[in-house]
Length: 457
Image 1: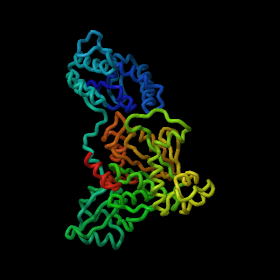
Image 2 (image 1 turned 60 degrees about the vertical axis):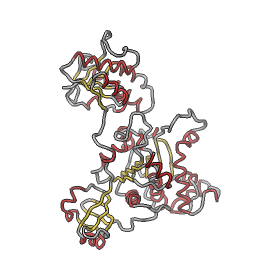
Image 3 (image 1 turned 90 degrees about the vertical axis):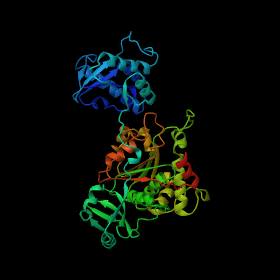
Image 4 (image 1 turned 45 degrees about the vertical axis):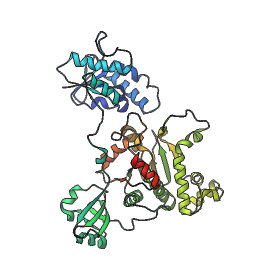
């Protein structure tokens, strides 16, 4: 049995963390509770987690004395601990909350040497300080894998020439004909299938149900966007398939994640009319130093955050109809609806908005909503934690398709990294689900300079 000592950021990151340590002793320093008290009025996910943890601790208090320990449902013990006031150390208790929390862990380390102490925090510097004091420190929710090992959603296999001929002639083959290869494939995985004796002979295919299906006409033009590489071709095929309800697109800057998702969404809503509207959302986190409060109503405040979406949509409108929005005055609301539905000409983001088929909003207000019949894109999803991503996915109603896009290397959240963010969490959790698909985009197409900067800097 071990003593796990939890830092404040662990409780704020995961409100279910108390049950994540099996049959060990979970120690919450009293200073953590004091620090969480400063978050309880916050309307963000941190505030909700702080309030939930406080209620749970109060419920456990009814089971006994928290200082002595009460049983946890997972089989362990929960305690609220504090450091002894006269305990010597390399810092003074009370100097900072970090010092106080460390002192509680160090106190347990000295008082209960028979029980190994593990200090759990998402603060990198605090882990370093704990290690310097002789404490074993760990990150919380750290996956034991490198980001390069993340499931890419694509692959390449070598098969007999006859399999290639069958794919072209019959449109697919049973996975059983692939022998041992089938054990290495995931649902909705996209493959380059090459002949083992003639590498120049190949076909593109998708794993679907118990078959390998040939991708015919995969290089389709979607709302003026033509795929520029194999991964983009796979991504557009995934985004246009209605049997795939959850799509994840991961890639560095300039690979076309948002543009491809928007093009597929506009095609599905305006031309195919499979969904009643396109909903685009993104978490609001500033890059660099925040400039403070913004003037105006909610639309004015959101414009700086949503401008990348507006830019992409205006580009797509120009690509689709060969003219720029500036060439024509926007239509009124009624005219916009008539032109946007059924593939008629639209000229700008404003016309799509007026037609009632495009909605752009932050994720702040999504809790409690139900979203049926919507093509939903969540951009910059790497800035969401695992539990925030769960909140988003549980809003999905009947007939809704949701796309998560992002770059795990560009994270603005202080307690998230490239491995424990909600985007990579979903990729790994859903890779074996037949209603989900994933593509990792690796080649930048924005410009040679953007590609060079993404690779060198």
